[in-house]
Length: 161
Image (cartoon, rainbow, N blue to C red; front, side):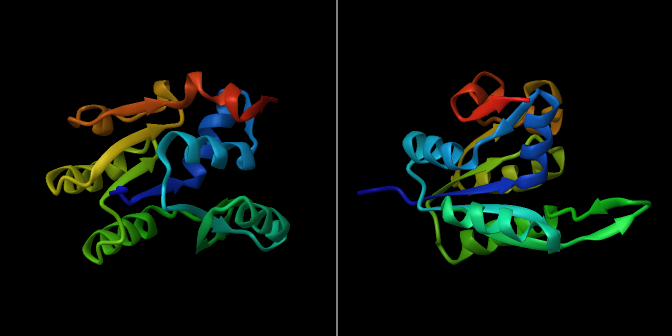
């Protein structure tokens, strides 16, 4: 029997983690890497909605990501659209509707520590994939779960900036 795995990606955390390490992700290759390594049923990418980036969103969908948007606002010229609550709600909702047997979170954000604990307590946590080992929160590292750091993986699906 195949185990249904869903992947939930904190899009901003992934993007910033890669960028700060000097990488630009090729999302088509990244999707392929995730498929080969984890064979997920669904990959959800949580991302702030910026109307001028519609073509990019279409590309992400063509790559096989299911996009979950958060409306953004502009604060002092900076775009804000934190999707943490949406990611937690979708993951927990999917848990209760039995949409997966195991899930993977792609984030290094400690705000998801409570979600990781909930999934671990319910034997539904596969692993966390953190975009940057140096920026991964202690609130994730102190959980009794496997964490894969992308630092040594980016070369497989990214180019140096």
